[in-house]
Amino acid sequence: MEFIIDTVDLEEIKDAIEHMPITGVTSNPSIVKATSPKNFFEHMKEVRKIIGKDRSLHVQVISKDCDEIVNEGHRILEEIDDQVYIKVPVSYEGIKAIKILKAEGHNVTATAVYDLMQAYMALAAKADYIAPYVNRIGNLGSDPYELINELSNRIVMDNYECKILAASFKGLQQIRDAFNAGAQSVTAPVAVLKQIFANPNIEKAVNDFNNDWYDVYGKGKGICDL
Figure 1: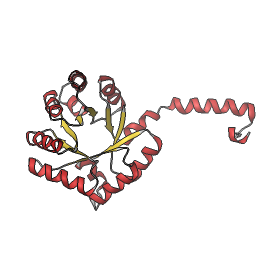
Figure 2: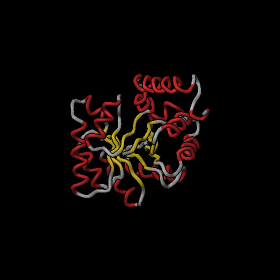
Figure 3: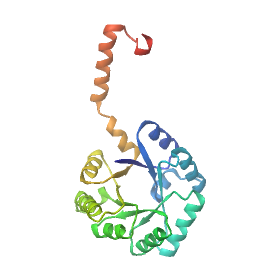
Figure 4: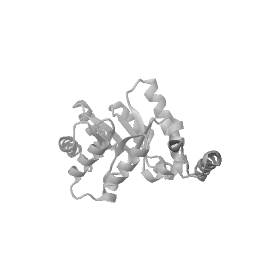
């Protein structure tokens, strides 16, 4: 199970990886726009420094034409490092580019997946991660969890080395359902993941425990003060 974050905000990344078991960072043009770094590649190098090589970094292309997608993928790998996962939308030109990048031995994340057959194409093209858009699929009247479940079954059935990276979330229930449907990974905004800890009952339980302790050993006297 992997928790990946949708952000290129350096301070937000630092905070998230210090507190939570974060396994990677994803970006796309919209995520980049939210931070608007002046020098994109230098900024992404800073992201890599923060997260290290043990966490995955996913960077999206912007071109629609296969040759340009491949060129952009090469530029991303040259400017950042050769461990980056190139995010490629699963369009007709995109699937061609995925095949080329994988044949060259690069890491690829297939993104903008709305349909099971799109996912199957990306799977057959040997993408490392496949990212179905959970919230957007639901908004279109389809069931994203059925897609995830069937894709997960196909990965196991045909013994593919691929992970489902569920994306596009507006709340925790969607993340929970994506994992339960078979996704190995999710990528979500930090603010959504922080909602896990926003339950007021957590703070109440901690306060109750502390008060019971202080009743025995004195107000403000912690374990390290004994």
